[in-house]
Image 1 (spheres, rainbow, N blue to C red):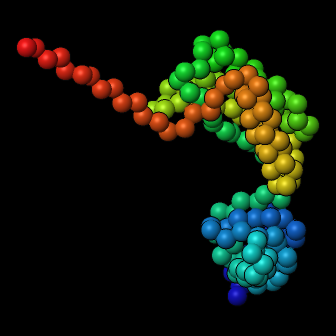
Image 2 (image 1 turned 45 degrees about the vertical axis):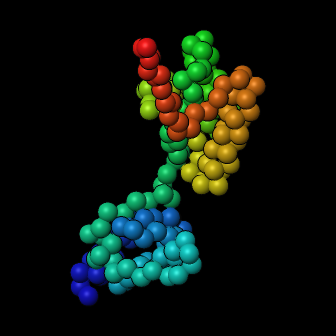
Image 3 (image 1 turned 60 degrees about the vertical axis):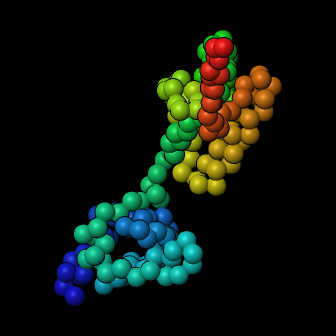
Length: 174
């Protein structure tokens, strides 16, 4: 009880989280509802109440999404090996245009980064300048849909797992 009391004071004074913050502790996540003398109550995403002893909380790694200022988005996409070199060179610029067309977004980079088993792979990084998850998902969806349309207009095909089989016919001698 004494360790929980000291932990409670530590939480109140140090403020690693406050009521309303969305935190993740181990494999459990939710919004902080109340910090008490002995325990902290968190409302999980699925609705149940999680109760942690304050001492257990302070000895755990806590991820506080309530203090997030922006969200980093990293995505990869692959195009077919039949894509002409001039179109490959334009893809990072096309992706940059699509991302920069969104509001509250900071574009970082886009590069042709690898030759995959069945795709030429590009990696892109940008930041959503908000911690709001719904806004992040709205922007992600808008980017994905715009890229789909833009690639369709440019005649660039997304890759999917394929294999090419070469069969050699043996010649017969009489």
